[in-house]
Image 1 (cartoon, rainbow, N blue to C red):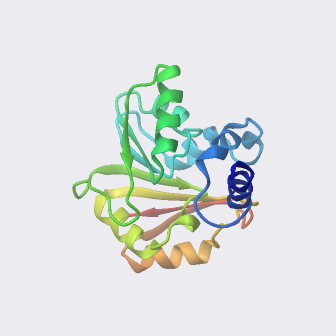
Image 2 (cartoon, rainbow, N blue to C red):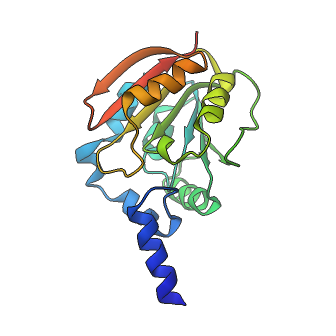
Length: 195
């Protein structure tokens, strides 16, 4: 039975769908900086120290540490569909003495936040895993403040990677305006504004 579980975990690790929490350690490997560094993400988010940001699909908190440190007077809410990922992220941030964070377990459909709650919402290699993308984009629009930025980053090698034009169509379909594009079609960040 144990070997069957290992096989399923490895299969899920290399195929489409929700990233298995058992492989979370791979998301913390420093070589990720070569492809997409937290510093690059922070620049693309145009963060200010007093903002309230939502990271959807935080996993074990690879980017969370750096974003939270940049929100010295603000708050970072880490959201994930797997409670195990949130637990790993919480332990990691507490170990690094970062406490300007909150944790939110997603249900895959809606977000229990009031309208206009966040200055920034960001996702890194996550949107392709979301089952009902249109519903999520509607929720992002609802909970983002006017003039807030929705930022979506996609990287080469992700089996769920979406094309920029697919993401743009979804975002503009619920009311977002295209704002900026960084990178290239292999590794990119696309930002949208809520007007």
